[in-house]
Length: 116
Image (tube, rainbow, N blue to C red; front, side, top):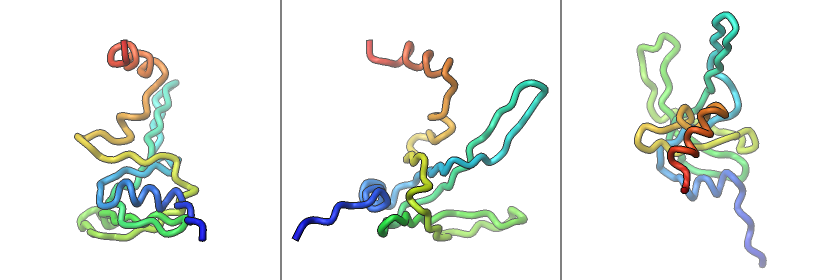
């Protein structure tokens, strides 16, 4: 009998189980426009990876109530793995906000920190 190949969700669950992550689905949280400048802020899901079953990634999140006065812990969300654009492990305060940079910033990063 051949070994079943793991799905993307199952692979992520194996690699990042019980770790804090940000999951970007391609949505924006808000868009700010000032005269001729427009800035979009990505919307992310923040939580701990619990499991991956087939094409579903199961994440335990903390969610604020609508009035933002109560925190709901261990709120499970079930994410279709096909909708995931990016997952980043939250280490040392770095998340998607430090990954998405402009083309000018990318060149500066390579010039300053890239292999020489």
